Length: 414
Image (cartoon, rainbow, N blue to C red; front, side, top):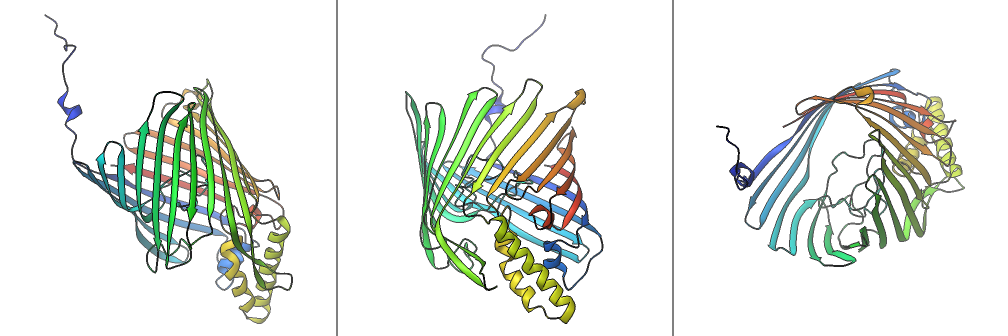
């Protein structure tokens, strides 16, 4: 006689949920890069300690996360530890990325206290409206980011009709010495809020931030699936009385204030051949013009020559003081991001091939990054990734430290 499971048999393992979890990953990432010794970033970093043409880095990272759930309470912690060896020696750091307590007194309300990354915005490579999040690295936008210490709540209601869901998320962000001190001006209490609407099958967020640490800012984002395989998304941010530090005509520095706008428009498409396309255009009206960037690169060149000729680094220190503005991730106005990812190319199991480019539309410089990912071993990812830089003198990507870079990553999840 052949037996079979009854229609109402229950697998107790599926409903016997453990109150705790522990996981994370460990990875090893060696990196080799061909240094461009004429670039501004090389001069800023190594003007007084010349390096070899070939850079070698060996990075080890351990990310741990755990949760404990009891009744309406959830405790979650995520840590990130990095140990690196470069041509300059050893370094290491451990950071708490998340550490928060979440309470759910009712199905409609969740209150969260502690350190958490809100992850606001719909963009893949950039998020102009992510007022409480650290900026993503478009070269690897899926990496975890360190959160902020804040108090927040989520109130959610569902409806029948064109408006299916409404969710309101207020947040309080204190900024004091040793508490969110990188967020902005100290000794301030900041208030943020997000109103989420699922309206006509479109995800919409209305976002605002006010307080003394940063100027007031307002945002809107949306995401909609036009078909099962085609999604469109966008973001718009308005920053009132924003401030930036720039070079003045006399060679000094000055602060410019004004209302700023930034926006993003993107699409994600999955073809019948299982190829994923992600295309985004990012516009930051508060970014630098090619002329402003050229003035800074000229300052770095002059400072470097002055140091070689006289040994004085006073001008170089001035350039270093401005570096956080001019050398931040994508400091100019207009960028295009394109990523093509092919699952199991040529029917090769467990492989994913991808190529990504970030194009600076203001100075026509860009980077090109092909990569290959293998997942044929349970819980293990092997990724080979290389980057190529192209651009004329004093363009953004041409002034990076590396002309080319090769990176291998072995990551084990547990």
